Amino acid sequence: MSDPSSSSSDSSTDSADSDERLQDYDEDVYYPPTGTYQNSPSTTYPQNIQTPGTPSAPTLPGLQELKSSPMDAEPGPSRGPFKFGKPPPKRKVSPEPVKKLRLLIYNAFQIVTPTDEMDVRFLAGRDQGRVVVFSDEQRGGVGLAVDENGIIEFMGNSMELRDKYEGYDVERYIDASKMTIMPGFIDAHTHPIWVADRLEEFKDMLERTPEEEQPKHKYNEGAIDIAINTSHTDDEAIYASLVKRLRRMVKSGTVFVECKSGYALLWEEEVRLLKLLNRAKEQFKNMLDMSITYFGGHIRPGFNVGDAAREIIFKQLPRIKKLGETKGLQVHNIDVYCDPGVYGIDEAKHILEAGHEIGMSINFHADEFSRMGSAEMGAELGARAISCLQRVSNRGIKMMSESGTIAVLLPASAYMKRQDFPHARKLIRRKVPVALGSDFSPSISCYSMPMVMNMACACMGMSMEEALIAATLNAAATIDNTGLHGAVAVGKYADLVLIEAPRWEHIIWQFGTHNDLISFVIKKGKIVKGLYPDSSIYIETHRSLHDDSEAMDVSSD
Image (cartoon, rainbow, N blue to C red):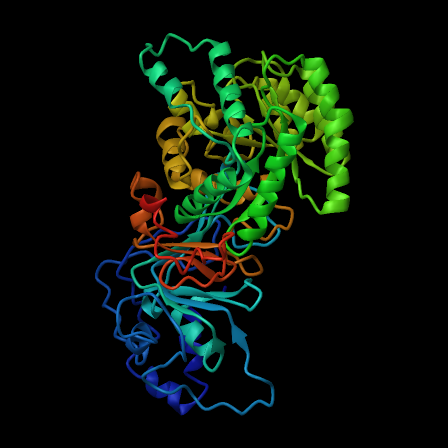
């Protein structure tokens, strides 16, 4: 992104027209912005710092026309030509066909992103505490352009956007006045497919003092009850509940989600859940990316650990591989619950290795209730991500840092179960990249990443910058194989959230108000929440989720 301070002065020598436009603009005087937004030390953008006693900036000719164009009413999307009050300088007619854009956003207060570079996979240590903030109030705010493939092709101030894209065929404009642009949220850990709930367990927990720990067998019984209920429910009912949950995630700003199976009693039922997740992945492909995790290594009723591990390794995983080759079944990750009373270190290791051998990424539960050394085992295997980690050892942290294994922390889970919170500060200090997940499940009723970020700050001591990076770039690194998600940067997908606020921090600070703050959710340049959504997602009745006025209303689900 170019320095916006250079575009106006350079254009003054191009033509008499541009001289006339800038005749009231003194190049020798610094005109400060009206706001004071401090950029990260890592950014190359100009520091917008208020200087006392300096004169206010004159209104640039044509700038107000830009702010009110192409809409004369409230900010929002608009179709049609990008009109300006003053015609641009004459240009030579090109024989080339008119160039096209999928989306052009302009007039925003800020763009915030973990990084503006393409090749940064994740951030750790002190780097996780810095974000890039770009603002330029003098030149109409900031924005970006999205090409026909949903990729961001340019970021700059509104005047640069006007000059660069005048004459383009733009499918959709968004006047982002009073808004801030940020990456769409990525949920690195969910259990979205099941029937019934675990409300009674929550009520039972509230009757105990915090010091009275829930008996472990009671916790296991609750998970088994959910699996029994799910096994007795038909496919369409299970799928309808899954669709409802995914919609609500999108409304909360989530654009990419990891989805686990696991609430099944038998192999055939596990495959049924994987097939339903694949069906949802196809149905929501223009609205929400899904990374599907095989979680056969979950709690089962009356199971022998050794027999269950052999069943998974020698029967279930080979069948999943065959279904992938013959039926196109997509399974991206392998998970196992490595904790006392479920799977031990040896069984978990063999399961994870077997899954990895057929192309699955290792992404599993570890060290939640007891310090077993499962983080060390995962780091030795080169695990992509390890979740929970309340009881992780210092040696496990060191090994995760050396292997580049990402810690997926679940503050909403610890909050709702009244458990100890993971040691986020220790992990960050020792340069383990930290991601966040909601742990949305029968026992954790939170699917909102803004609320998860707030809990990460308030309960685990993370800064707002660390939490934002954990819920975007670092979360993407746990499930994204393309490197095109998790940041607002040229060359990455335009997966965006636009909030009605002058600063990005409001999305974390305003706890529980995210549905009111979020004006637009954008997936690859297509509006999936906001006025007149673009994506054509249909459920089995072929009723568009976006043309339906209730589709994005949580209260109607």
